[in-house]
Length: 569
Image (cartoon, rainbow, N blue to C red; front, side, top):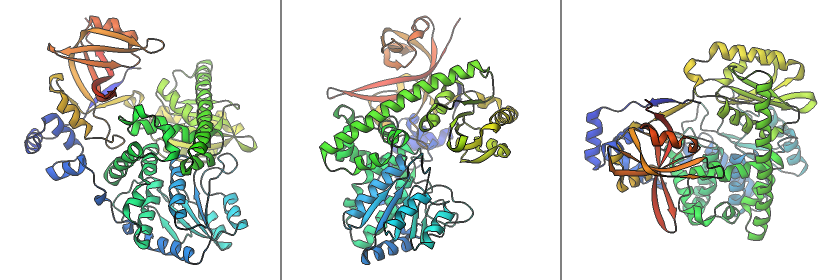
């Protein structure tokens, strides 16, 4: 599939040169900083060296004072407190963090994670009933609750108070909780609007710590869990999130808690990054809730016993292996279904199989977009013969709005621009599928049907040296809002050395040069082994990023090709 290259607009040349001179940095680095709205020495210093002193006052969040007062009253009156969270990574890290924090100075606290298949997302009536039956008088939700008006009211009618800690967009009516902590509330003036659910929970911990005179280092020890939640939930890595992630990663690397040690083999700690969380830790924690019960993930995260932690980790690792096998098999079946039903040239993908596992259909939808770049829905059988689906979209196309236009066929749906979940009656599947295809065909723009690679700037390879790599390193942690810089180099040539790697020899490592052989570089090109003869024969333009690798105590610098355009005669 051919990608579309889009070169980001540059700042004014004089502005770039002025900043480069002020910082004594190469103009290429100054350009990257200005693209991130960093235009002074002081802003650069804050960006390159984050400080915990720059975290916002938690009491800037609406209802924070009320929330802390209610928790302190519960402690004073020796009430039972239930920590309630979602079954994904953000939810389980939130629950583990807040449970450990509260339990460190108060005994009457337990936690509850709903069953993905029996109770579904968010606060459930079963969860509230559990609180009623076990004499809890305060429920603190994390990563959920902001739209649960009826369930919070049900709890209130049964003399149970709620404190909601959430980061999702609220509905028109807030639940009748004692406090609703959510930076996305329209009436909340908290400066950082894009905290994770765990991040909101951390701000409540910060506020409680101030009230109880708990030292800051004690609560900063939980930032590893906050960093995992931020990375896994794909929230913007800017402002306060950048600070929380920066120090959370340091905590993970330097002093990993017992339950996380097994995710962090020593050989990866030197280069451990947000990507390691997204592709290494998060899928395993998520697998617990997808295939079994997320209770196991919380137990692992709060474990203080290495033998117990190893046992739980082994179970979760097995669940993740099962998840990967399911994911791979269902993706293969779905691609066959697309071909069999003549959908290869469609504007959308809509597939269904009653035997597909509900816990992985979202992953499969994302996999299908890698194969066929278009809005995608994967259906399987749900409760009461209804069909349930996960929807995923492509850059720029609002799948939530498209689903709204099919609402006559839907029992329920929810989500946002790029991801959604829905339920419909089996008899409505075909008419829904046909209407959805029509809507996508009518509304999707031609340029939204091709994957886009955003390029930060065109550079000459001779600009890249050891100092340049080190300066790029200061831009970390990378993630949404601060992606790893992507460069374009034109008229590059094969440098004479190559080796094929991987089980199928599908990956390529080689040397390249530009202008002259003095500036040759080692590059790696994943899944491009089959192109070696073209690399040898033709000059090319390449889109790439820079990476540091550590091996046997040494640092190696490497260019990683993301895409290539050959100058064929």
